[in-house]
Image 1 (cartoon, rainbow, N blue to C red):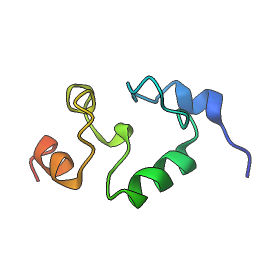
Image 2: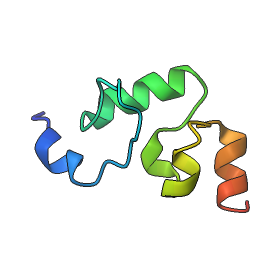
Image 3: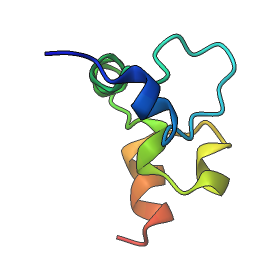
Image 4: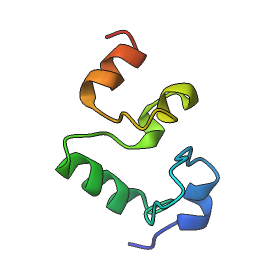
Length: 64
């Protein structure tokens, strides 16, 4: 499968400056799920900037 990194970057809202997975969604998702987290794209921008990518933060952000 071909990575569409350039296209993915247009929609990536990750604000972490040192992230090496920006635009590489499969690696990003694998990395975050391994840490029991979700990637930036699952969060509204204001919540994403807190860097709290926990499932609890996700539920709170979307009021689940």
